[in-house]
Image (cartoon, rainbow over all chains, first blue to last red; front, side, top):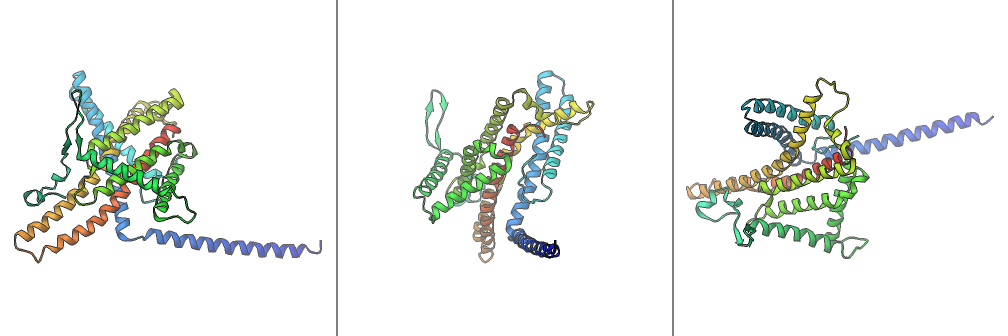
Length: 118
Length: 253
């Protein structure tokens, strides 16, 4: 085992090389990310508006669908206006649920595309 | 985008459906309209680009081949990353939807054309078909278990009925938000373009000709912005289609 210290030095050199390679790789990736993130004010504005509009439609559509179903059920069952009130409340809750799920699914990406689930 | 004169300042005029060829199928009005014409043009444009683009299959691709390959790669990546490898059986559907919406939006940006996606019946038709497909496929694939989509795990039995109602409502709201988003984006963008054009005409008519270039500048910026919105909305529509198909493939959160 006279080359045990040799092996150690070898291993250390390899580890150092790996660390520097990883650092270089990370630098390239962050540079790329930074380049992607400031791709121009127009583009990021468009993406932000698209995301904002998604939140708006997800919320409003759920509330409107709830109210509509409540109104129709009221008309058929003759329980005006109780089901309308109840289902509008549920619709708003469903809207919050939609928005929450959108926000919870995309913690880092800002452009509104959800990463794969599971 | 609209005729000169009074209708130049009417921003809604551009969305009128005009009957080009009246057709009547046993009492059902199936007239050929300008909307149908531009849908055909969009579909034909996609088919032509993809056919010519994939005809030669060179190693060093031509521009058309490169764009066809880019479109394929883009949508294939989107489907794989959202629904996994099992979702690739829906790739033709997602690709068709993405390319059709994209082509309609891009063609609709040209002057004297018609924006098909600014009609809510078109987007609603597509969105409800997609949701119907995911329901039918989910039940076909998973049977009764598919309804577990509405029952999140780990909820106390007291709250469960309320949660189920909320989940069902949020499922029903999906096609509504999907269709309204695309429709409203295209409608608002095209109205804005015509309104700015109307400013230009009105300023000229009122004798403030030195101010008229300002809204013209605005139109230039807005057109670039509309180009971005067109592509982005086609992308969002296709991504959400993938997300909904993913729910049919893998129900349960």
